[in-house]
Structure formats: structure tokens, C-alpha cells
Image 1 (cartoon, rainbow, N blue to C red):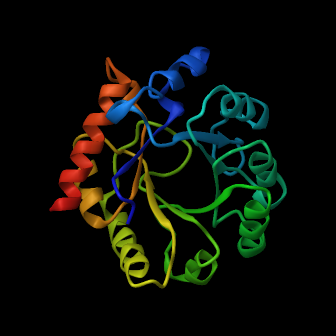
Image 2: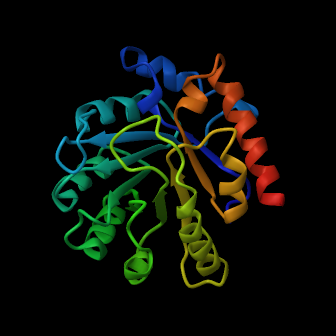
Amino acid sequence: MADRPLIAPSILAADFARLGEEIAAVAGGGETRADWVHVDVMDAHFVPNLTLGLPVAKALIDSTDLPIDCHLMIDDPDRWAIGYAEAGAYNVTVHAEAAKDPVALAKNLRAAGAKAGLSIKPGTALEPWLDALKHYDTLLVMSVEPGFGGQSFIADVLEKVRTARRLVDTGHLKLIVEIDGGINTDTIEQAAEAGVDCFVAGSAVYGAGDPGKAVAALREQAARGRAG
């Protein structure tokens, strides 16, 4: 388990006209500093929404020293994901449901200089992907249906988190357990208690008056949940 809860603000909830400033708002010092910045890439094919692509992601990567966590909700990630790694993304997450050869893709992402992440939708079982996950650095459990921000948290996915946590703690997997969707002050403690390492939070950070203070408060809550 990560030494402390990791908070990854999602720019999907930020002001798209001021993305550089919005990232800077969580790039301060101490507890107000985010651990990662989560960038949702949607192609209007794998998911019904359309957000941004590689040129904007690269501009964001170049604009900050915070690690950029690119979540690719796209078709054919085997073709497109490597570009995000080559652009300098810290972590590049692809969807199990879209990847043609997830093991080869993980190896290619790592070779291109990024951590490799595999994401599963709320309705996707974890077990069929356990062998592939041995090649990944991050498991991103979706706690909403991918494609839209502001959805309600699906608590049933925490059973997958608990399974992944056991496998990591017993040495069968070596990865960070990340969760994305509906994470806020009402849900972060139960997610932390289930074994999440990294919490993606959109509205809970960028809907707050002070995003940096919101990061610190969420991390403190997650630490409480982890402590039980």
C-alpha cells in the first residue's frame, strides 16, 4: 500500500478555459499539493463523450511538474496509448474492455517511459484480468460508468478493490489500486477502508472554493478511512 493516500484531482471537473491555472491550484506545497493530476481522454466512440486528445495532454504535461495520470477511455488503445507515454505522461491507463493485447501494451507503455495502468468498468469482473495485471503498475477501478463526470458512486465495486488489495498485500500483484468516480467527502473513507491507494476526485476538488485545501482534506479523510 502507498505510504499515504494519493489524491489525483480530475481536470474533467476543472474550467477547460483555464486548465493551466487549475492544475497550478493543486500544485502548491505541503498537504495541499496533489499527488497526480488525472486527465480523462474520451473519443466519443468507447464512451459517448468527447474531451481532449494528445496535443492538449502534452501541453498539460509540459506545464507542470506534477505527475500526469492519463486515463484513456478510447477505442484501439494499442495504437494510440504509446503517444501519451512518449509525451511524458507519468501513468497511462487503458481500458481492459478496449485493449486487444493488454500484456503487450503494458510492456510497450513501460518501454516508452510511463507506468502502465489497466482500468475496468463497474460491470467488468476482475478475475479474468489477473494474469494481465501482473504486467501493470496501476489498477483503476471505475466506480461510475466511464464517460461523464458528476455521477453517483457505485459501492458494489469495492469488492473488486478488496480482492485487488489482498492480492497486492500477499505479493501476487505489485500495483497501485486507484479508484475513479463519485469520490468525495461522503465516499472516500469507505473506498480507503476497502484498500484504495489513489483517489481520483473531480467535483470534490474543483467544485471547492480552494482546490488545494480540498486535496488536503480528502487525503486526511482517506487516512482516517484507512486506519479504520
